[in-house]
Amino acid sequence: EVTKKYMEFEGIRVPGGVHSVESLTWAWKEFEVRDDDVFNVTYPKSGTTWLQEILSLIYSNGDPTPVKTQYSWDRVPWIEQYSGRRQIENRPSPRLITTHLPIHIFPQSYYKSKAKIIYTVRNPKDVCVSLYHFSLVAQFMESREDFQDFITLFLSNDVMFGRWFEHVKGWLTIKDNPNFLLLSYDSMVKDLRSSVAKICKFLGKDLSDAAIDSVVEHSSFKAMKDNNMSNYSAVPNDIFNKQHGTFHRKGISGDHKNYFTPAQEEEFNEIYKECMKDIDLAFI
Ligand code: A3P
Image (cartoon, rainbow, N blue to C red):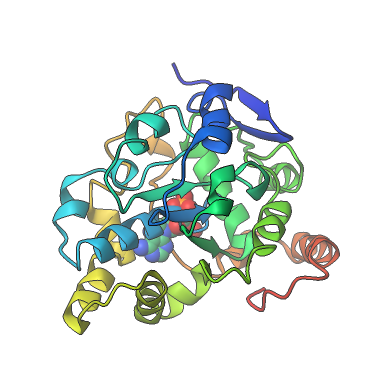
């Protein structure tokens, strides 16, 4: 049954349908991180699915077979969801793992491991626009028809996984850890090949130029929109209402310009400045 009911856990709200106190507690306190685990960490709508595809393709040396035969959520599962434990616990290494968790409830055993974390960050105004559309499609999300009402929700602690600001600031506290890579969605849009090369270097994966070309080709917006293993078309309509849109919507930087009025943008920028005053993220 699809429910819009959110549950509260350690100060944040998450959709109750796919999370539980048990699943979140397991991820946080019991999950044993291995040194060769790779974490795809994002705030929702910041490039999660894109990284799932890129990581899958890097670990297959550019062979598209896995991304064409296995669902993205099986290849690089979410650790915090109900199914996470079953999918991840006994999987052979190297495990590719996704999470939207804020850092304060990330697996505690990470801190005594050499596991790698890739954190992808996206312009929060574009995140807000993307999440607005997604909330109309995803029936497990709280939505608002009116965009101004959605901005208000986005800027409040009621938004799922907590506010963008605290999520990003929390994760940036470990940015100097050598096993942490900060990626920008907007840089990936500009130059995907350079980002893929950077990810390979970070992971110590030495791919040939042809293999990197293949990763780039199969993780393009068009390729992913057409890939039924990554575009969520397999999810039933009562969970993803396809009448309200598709998962792969636009895949661009700067779409907020088409949605925010100048007054809304100004107000958002003020809040950004206040919340992020000690943080240097040049993309905004
Ligand atoms: P838009 O709604 O702005 O189009 P997530 O996977 O974290 O939920 O993020 C979804 C967003 O990433 C959507 O943004 C989606 O279109 C975009 N996206 C997914 N795959 C992409 C790709 N290969 N290239 C660019 N954007 C992509």
